[in-house]
Image (cartoon, rainbow, N blue to C red):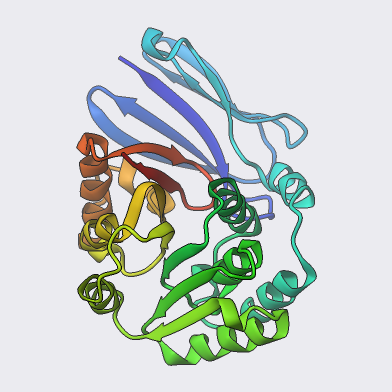
Length: 286
């Protein structure tokens, strides 16, 4: 039996969650504790200290030979503060992030470390033509636009007009409005229109952070628009950890789980699932 122990934290408070996964039989246990009290759990004659003091670095242990007993760092509030301290966030992005934090639905905004990764992917690709599905207030699209050359273009699709106005204001403030083609409407309709206009295989990069149950359709449409060697990034592939919990089977979680499974089998792309933010899968079109 493979047993995986992990310690995760809900916020920068002292409340912490100890999560235990059992691969056979498939079960999921969620145990809670307060403050930094060490907690040991014994399963199948194996004992692990799952949540040590706040000064220790929690880690995940896979007790299975196929994982080589690999220790993987879990991101605690303290460690995440350190990560953020090493993110180069332009002042205009910080301003937008702080304004968005006061809005309802602010959790839809990507994290600074995610935005930095997206910008770097755009730069590594030498991308000039990009697509984003799901703009919200524009944090990720602004990061991408700032990374594009002056001749670059980002097609930014958003169905909600209210946060889109915030995004457009910040494009202006950052001086990148000329790089962003805003599309107010349903993302699938916009993509189909672009395909009809003969724009297939003409985009370098795409970021998907829209309706999760539409991921498969978005992906199929984007595969037509992105060139060979281009990259498609899908956000929220870990869905707050729900995809790994067999007891969670709501429509959205099942949709994301099925989409992740389909990507694993899709030989049209090479993939890398990255546990950053709420999880992102980076796909390179073959």
